Image 1 (tube, rainbow, N blue to C red):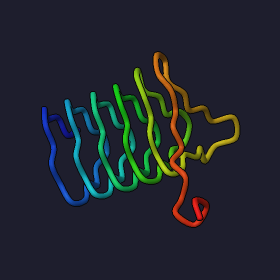
Image 2 (spheres, rainbow, N blue to C red):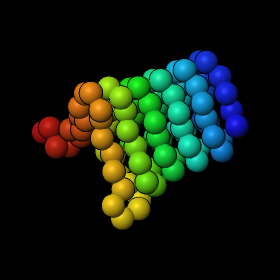
Image 3 (cartoon, helix red, strand yellow):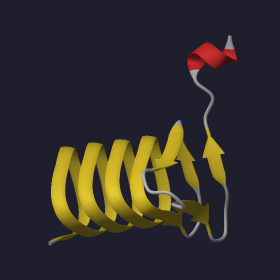
Length: 100
């Protein structure tokens, strides 16, 4: 298990991550528990965070944020997978090609 308060990294490959804040280019992990996540691509089993801001989010069963999720795409890999926010909203950014 990887425990830290603030993580600033290019790529993270880990079994479990428990952190205050994560700033990374790409994250590959089994479980992520963090307050704030700011990343390029996230590929995980389960994600539990205060706020998530990422490019693409891929998770197995559950992805939730206490506040907000902002991303280009979010998708569960398991049938009946769920992503949601408890007190905020999910914002899917429009891709450049769709804006034109």
